Length: 202
Image (cartoon, rainbow, N blue to C red; front, side, top):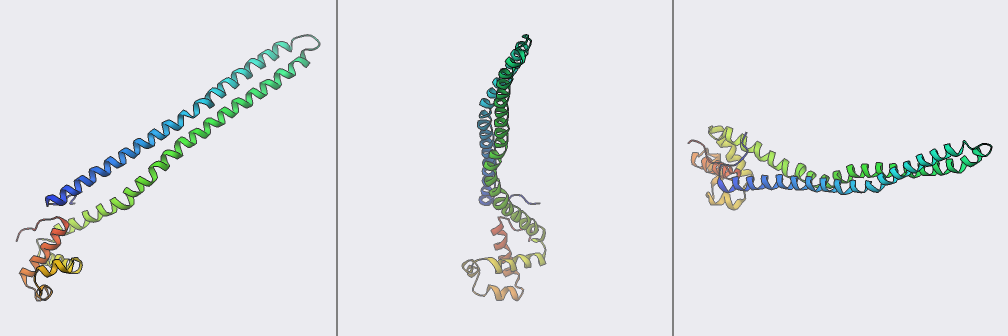
């Protein structure tokens, strides 16, 4: 497998791009973690609400239990305490639900923050990088063989701009069809140069 070009400008460009992509992904991961931390702070009021509601409910239930021991009217006096305790438990439940909502947001929002940057990497940069690696690896495998040079020359004829081909001579296509070794070599060199690779042994 060929991961980087032989020619310095192409290799430097690839290396810089790879480093920038890694830094880009790292920064977005840090942003996602920061978003998660900020969102999780929203759970603090819910925690306090749940704690306060539970504490009040326990105290009211305890007070209701003590008042319930009063002879004759104990049952009547207990009802307000029980009602207030139920209301306090509802407040505690609301605090708990708010914490659950915050926990869900702390998961969803960071994923949303990461989705677009990672999609750009996975669907734009990575396919281009893999395609170059495959093409360069195949080119390296065939560049030293006569048939391989002919394939590289054909690829150059099919894909290089006319201005580049014309610089090799006005009859470069005819020379290639005739099997001219110099024309095949020049065209193969053109394709290798496009990939950032050096020519193999002659």
